[in-house]
Image (cartoon, rainbow, N blue to C red; front, side, top):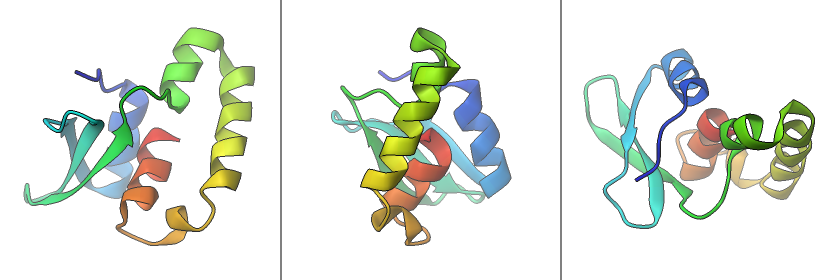
Length: 92
């Protein structure tokens, strides 16, 4: 099970969504609207994300990984309310 980091909780509060550890075997987080309605599952297990890199390898490395992620996912992270959008906002 993925341990949701404080960074992700802060980002979720800004977006007015609720995050919970996912029950899906290959996903990290389930995203719900403020009423508890399921929106999407995000974050593939087995891959690190910005808050994880911050804890393990430090800010400089995490910032570089973030930059590369944002380049690689430029198209899907711009579609509001998509999995890519929430992954970008909550995990990166």
